[in-house]
Length: 125
Image (cartoon, rainbow, N blue to C red; front, side, top):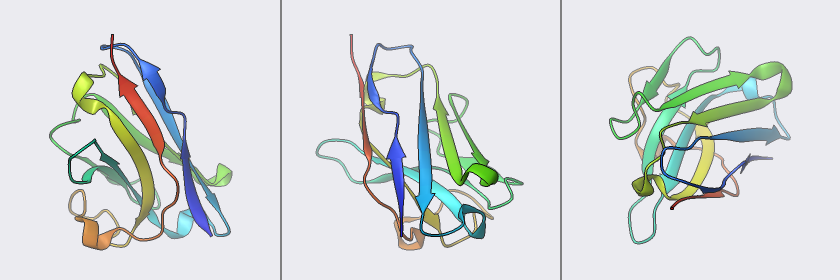
């Protein structure tokens, strides 16, 4: 029972990537989803969440206007479309269940539930 993030890679500044988050062992529509990342030597940062029905989404200021979260429950998959990427976006990206329901903003780490292996995103020229 886990969430698996994929789709990372090496991209030039200003480029785009789309990350996927696939649920296995449970129905994704039971949960809101949070995306978070961890850069080398830095703490984990919650960057976006989406409610289980996709009726609400929130973003950290660091990615607002550049990233877009979505989900297709019929495919048991959530997505993070990343555009206008910057070197400071480099890190390992993870998805997890959001136990707060994504009702009032990107949740703190205490509300992150089950997750899984992340995917590396490197933004460099």
